[in-house]
Image 1 (cartoon, rainbow, N blue to C red):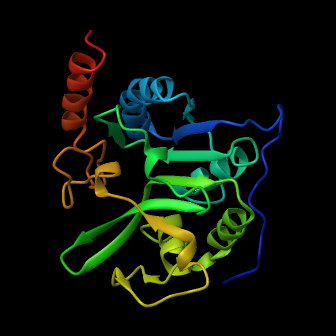
Image 2 (cartoon, rainbow, N blue to C red; image 1 turned 180 degrees about the vertical axis):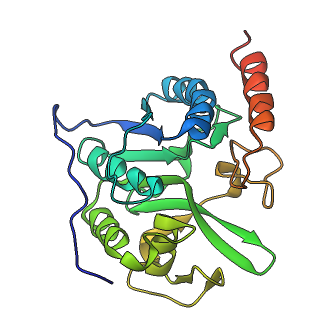
Image 3 (spheres, one colour; image 1 turned 60 degrees about the vertical axis):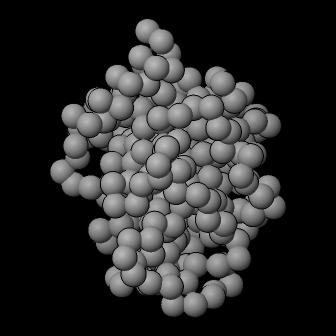
Length: 233
């Protein structure tokens, strides 16, 4: 690791909230377009389950311009954990397909982080595209180490690679090396909460377009299905 630095602090303008936040952000035209498709599905999900919702488009803006855009989510999550007991992050290139299941029903409230690990062939990839974090001291400690692992600032998986390393996974081979002091502080949930083309549940709650280039047409298809079948518009 390089020299330790603190995660940038956003100004606090209201008191700590006692509810759950569902959040995402996007910079750049393609991801902002995808966020616009995610947002109505996320807003409906949050209302249905009594959560707050923040979908943050940042055209031409950054929370931490010295790093690649993926790192902005660490800044936002870190800030929101000071205001909420639970923060649910969803990448902008994901969309909610089935809003009826409450993700909190599968969480252990004592565990700092929950996410899906994708098993693709022999590869195992913990994926921060859907990332549930509790406002616990250990969570902030883990985010600090993720932020300060400078080896991964420009890695193709950015903060995900840093978290993988922290909990005992090799980001290069996508394999599990072994237990670390932080492995037990993460729980893996079913892939229905973060389905992707290479590892998709039969009935995904959240579908994540991890691939590049982004198949935006298919995201529009899922959005139209949500509007038609769930919102009934």
